[in-house]
Length: 149
Length: 196
Figure 1 (cartoon, rainbow over the protein chains, first blue to last red):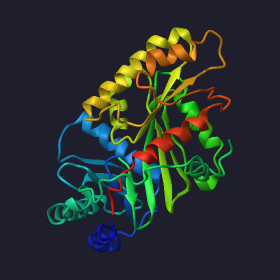
Figure 2 (figure 1 turned 180 degrees about the vertical axis):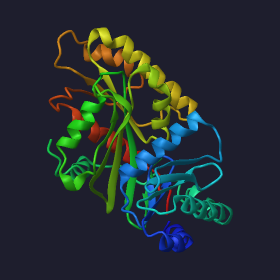
Figure 3 (figure 1 turned 180 degrees about the horizontal axis):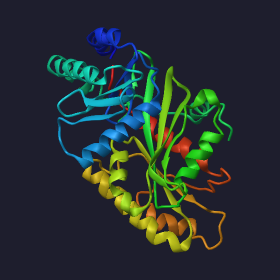
């Protein structure tokens, strides 16, 4: 997974440099944020992006869909990173002078990413066995320690 | 599906609260939010209508304690219970790791409970899940109200696979954490180490 993050970072580094107010979230389709660039990884962002994506797919079934919501300077884009849209890129920006150019540059990089990146690295489970065979009550108590109940 | 990150030693899981409309799913999650310290949670997201009926989903990310060196992250979702939000329920169940079925214990709500349970099973089947294998806990909510069905009756009609169950009164918090703790345990026992 660390190699994936590194690849992602290198691939989009120049774009971030050109658009310092751009934040990128690399997420799985169920909303888990896998990596963030120039953005604080907030899980609620992942949930909202994933929900928006799923809803838009129900409204318009099209594998090439790019979800965009923006005014003239603030907004976000949501794009599929792989052909089956199992991974998404959420890009948000603020105070951007030319959002159309940003969108164009981002799309170019995403297309390149799609063609170059080997998704089998993260799609293929590395381990099939269960992580825990038994969990004691005291271990569960530790997980929930500090919760007022 | 759950993510295990061995590098950061983190387990991420998705738990969905499912059940009929006005059964208390959002109340459960709100109670958990209120009783959880700031360092254990992020902002709760509620996409609801003006009269506080869930429109799309509620979302609460919890950062809980560690187990054998792994940090645990639980993402709690609720679905909208009203029948015409079928599409939303399908979206939210995608990638689910564990389910809390929040049933309304009142006798006259049994039909709604059964319809909701049937709907959940249909969605799971459609998405390729074997509903018997999805970690599930039943919560018989509103147990403080008069005219409630007996636990035996609720289990006989709803809990056909003998899943763990709890009586609850989500408004006061009774049974809320017990339910969450049980579904979390089942989910963790079901986690496969699938992301290196």
